[in-house]
Length: 140
Length: 140
DNA sequence: GCGTGATTACTCGGATACAAGATGTCCGAGTTTGAGCGG
DNA sequence: CCGCTCAAACTCGGACATCTTGTATCCGAGTAATCACGC
Image 1 (cartoon, chains in turn brown, purple, cyan, blue):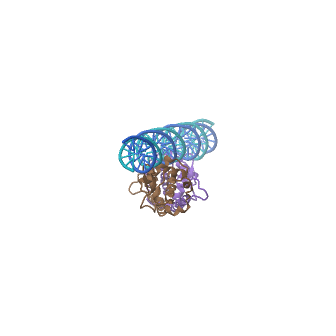
Image 2 (image 1 turned 120 degrees about the vertical axis):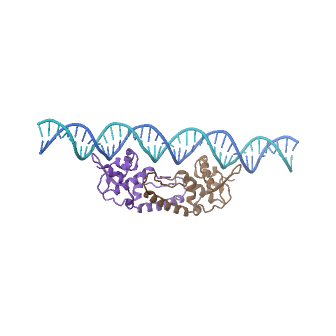
Image 3 (image 1 turned 90 degrees about the vertical axis):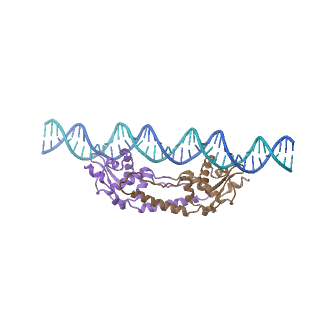
């Protein structure tokens, strides 16, 4: 039970994208460079974010990624769901004679607390902390 | 990011033990039979619960497991920590120049919400739902 | 200068490789109880 | 009836086997912009 490294990459990536001027397009290479991770792997993660509608992609030369329009209040939960999936953290697969599993219910409620908090936390609130200095040297 | 099946087994097992008369000793075989899982694997799980001080074990003939004395207000969190470990769900391993990772802080707070809820939920409150009919046929 | 084709710089997707963790199984060792047996 | 031995019923721990998932790489395909070239 741990959040995957991919989720961490995704959160940081979204934060970088949010910190940039809107409509500005950035490539996988640049995003990977800032986090010092593999571009090819980050590409897979970005694809998930696109599928979930958090960012948009432009193919071809001068292509890259930018924030999806109509999506500037992205929550932590949005990103986590995009990467980890939306299935619940706990499910009792055991046979329970008549009624539902009481343990399952408690765990669902606990997850509800987590979800509530994460859905209220918006990534944009952290933009002030972002350091984009790696980009300025790039000059495109 | 999911709770392991072992955690589910552990929670159910603890509930069974709590539902029984205090000081009553029950074996791995019986506990495994109730959940229709492998006794040898459940044994590993029970060992973790013992190490964490939630239950006690008696070796030898007529041995088995029983609730640890001075431990009747066991929370969900106790069991989860015993099985999954106590390390936090999220840790940002990336290099952050000056300050700590803001994302990490949010995630820690979110986990705090989860922990708070799970530590307040006591297993004993669910004892009413437990069905011990499988045991009665055993007759020891 | 203007269209056309080739090159370049990107994303996208599938296939693959590798590592780690979860899930089980197997077996041998230790421990306690109780039954059986001999005196 | 007493004490000894031995078998049975347990837990405990390590060593495996297997499966799934996460992490990462590689390559070929598609796409859009730009460059080069011929007219």
